[in-house]
Image (cartoon, rainbow, N blue to C red; front, side, top):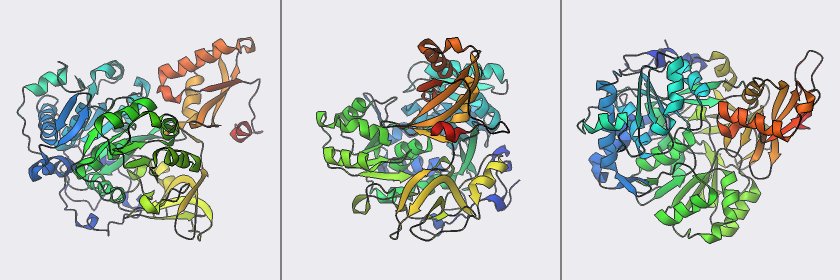
Length: 542
């Protein structure tokens, strides 16, 4: 077990026991107020929800969904009722991990807070994930409890059939009033709950990210990490209770969690939740609800710029981009059409949220920005030594949050070097301290803001009976930045036709999240390999 912590409230010590040793952590700098003033006992749900109601925000709108409006008091009531169900019906004990599987709905947010209130650890998953991916997450985090949107229940049931340890599963409707099992259970519970007195360094969240090996990796964040994220990047945004946000990232993605839950609630603002977005729907949402702040990926800004003149965007004051590099041309196009500058930023699941950005007059189009308050950043050479301004190297960052992988010492050693979090991005830092993106250092495919592992897609394709060999890379694309491109050697070359392309694409969509499917498929007689048999992906990229 890692040592040097406050006394944990977790009766189930799995999360703390599977943290990396302190010696493998990055430098954690909390010298910036108020980060240095957090108490030893801290429950993020208490801080973000209960406190806001106690301080007079209970009547204010928290979440809007279609025609429904939940106030902060409504959200607190639902979260308390769900927390009671978790403890009284599902036998949750503090420290248990809880799978949350749902699109962006008010009930997902209520369930997320309920887990923290009950002392559990949230493991939220993106709604497009299939049973295959969920099974790996449940096995890695040893999950016994799940709350899921009823429309995604079949995927969770498949996991449960294969994993008897997933003993407690309840379903909910988007607003908790659709007669599902969790809806009914919470309706009979009172709307009060005594939050578990968690330590500030108890694990609150295990966020899974996909790496180049194709296996999802759990990253562990404490209760104080969630609050620290609220007190760093949002300083650039000047959020007020009058603000209303919306965006495309899933709440299960740390970018979406911060943008659509943590940051607005820290300031008493409101959020419009939409289950799925198209560019036109996003702009229509801004106009309908008077949205002031928008979060999405560069791909969406490129698409929306072409139709923005068809919508009233007069309420919009803040546009934030993350998930992939924001091209200068996209920034210029959006600014030309709307008059609004996009706040670019880079974050990582390992770091919880954005750590380099710039807003307002500090924006330099094409640059990601400078370290946000509380963080330091530099570029490193291949030996891990900081380089002077003007140099290009590996981006490294440290601050109040940092990388702690769940039971993954090999990956921990690769990500944390000499106290720095090394993200795998290649950057250049200029004389004024601005950081400029150069490239990804690994084989991760970044498509429309999603990180996609090439080897994971390869593994699925190789399960198809027609496929003898395959290789997957990221191919440049003007709309998505990159798309998944598969080079396939068939067992029967006579099958190399359009029908087989569609068959392989459908095969992948059915087994892993559909956004990972290869949009381009090219058939080859052979694949380039070294004399020792290693695949030469760089030759395919050429």
